[in-house]
Length: 80
Image (tube, rainbow, N blue to C red; front, side):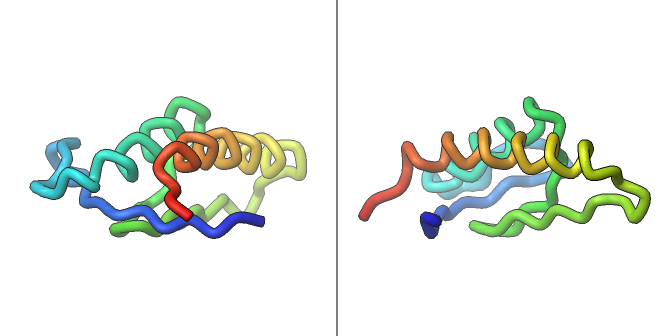
């Protein structure tokens, strides 16, 4: 399993990047999550996903698949 270090700021009220150019990487990961049906919370380089208590196993797999696809976007920014 890979470890990712991403930086950036995203303003959830305006949906704009912060002053930091490194925010582009996290913004693109968030956009990929949303495009794949997952709406996580983000803070700097962290994603937090809190599924509902009534989620089914199939829905959980679908959500994890969406996060996996979004992390493929993060791979483009990984240095190491």
